[in-house]
Image (cartoon, rainbow, N blue to C red):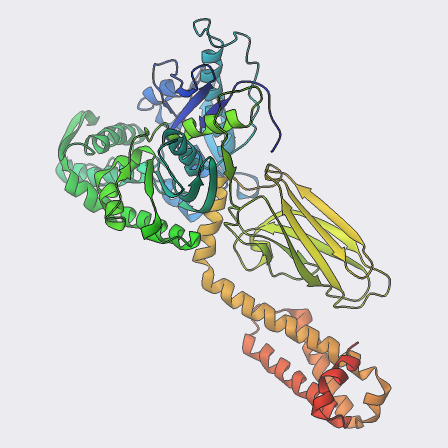
Length: 617
């Protein structure tokens, strides 16, 4: 069992468009969603800056139409993205607020605050929303009207765990269904929110939740459906009135609000009106939109959701027919066409809608917080077995290939050992730890590095043992040991240190898929270059043997030396433009020379393997 924490158990869902906070009530053995100061269970993830104050939540969204350039939303979507990112460049056309390039191309949000120009990164904006949700929790916990709560219970919030949104929703589902499930249940959580889309497949047996696979898209959600509708009506307004409002932030903000409202209405109605008084230059706008038209303009996005579901199923190794329940999470999961497409994928299943999609994540997070906290007697004895969201591996010395030790979607806690070999004679081995899905180590996220001292005189190819260990709290320990000497070193990486956010994780998975062919070519070239390097090493080592030299003519030695020099130059240049076929030709030539070395010594073929060992050791 992991560390137990003191204090109240709070769960916060920090969403792209709306956020929510929940608390575990020990005396009532249940979770309660906390209302904010406006009497709402969800709070808009909006931050606004004015001449005299900063507004967060409902207050920020309510004034967005009159102060669009200084009202920031979608911040969660921007975390981890560079200004030059193609997605950012495309979305800039839709944002009324201004974004600029900061240091190292970091995306910065430009606003006017208290008469001064200010720059904030996406993480800072998200932290402001989190502060608001903390205040909502504090107000509730410190209220004298709540007899079950100590009025002095909270002085601050301690983040004890960050869990994936679908995982939190699955915990909420498990708590809601407790007592109704016999045996093992396979659950698919479909989380389509305002800005991001996630799918998780979990297995539930009793109180044990095991995550089998996760997948998602950091740039797919209700905001995208709204944008399609906004663009549609911008064109309609242009045709009707010969006026283009695409460059007017106030008009776009008011139109977007009307479109968001229409989208929600179309979840229970077949037709609705989009109406905005004095949208631009005193011109009123009024138009009808049908559910069928809305579905048509977004069908490619809906189909993208289904592809992600199929991909996650493939990763989980669970058959579609073996899924017992499909849990809907996120406001956009209410869209009828989305539910129809899911129903088509799982024709014999009933979609699970008992939990409010807007509240499920905060609900499950509060339950998990209670499990990890001290002093609660009635809390369910839930055990969450999560998976590694990205592959974990190493690169040794100058090797640029990512050597995967723990593949993505492996259940934790676990311990895994893998054998490696040194790439040079003597010296110190540099070991770099990465997470990611790309073939080239440098394209992945560097978690840390350490060095291992080998025994004096240790030749190239000296065996190493690398061990990855992840405990129940997500702490990763990587150790390396030279087997012959027992020399050892290690590094420990916690959940926060250098680890990627959920949004960055999904982005890396998307990039890995996008560059799959490029990575395949890189791996092919890297293998050939490595084989050539090792072949050069073996040939040079063989030529140091006196009995080998005696069987070679001067011309043969010169030819071999020229070939190794050519190959060495090729390796040192490491020219990216160098065709892989040229490298392969050099490798074949050297391998033929190695074969001739064996033949020229008069050793019979049946003894060839032992003789090669003599040559190269």
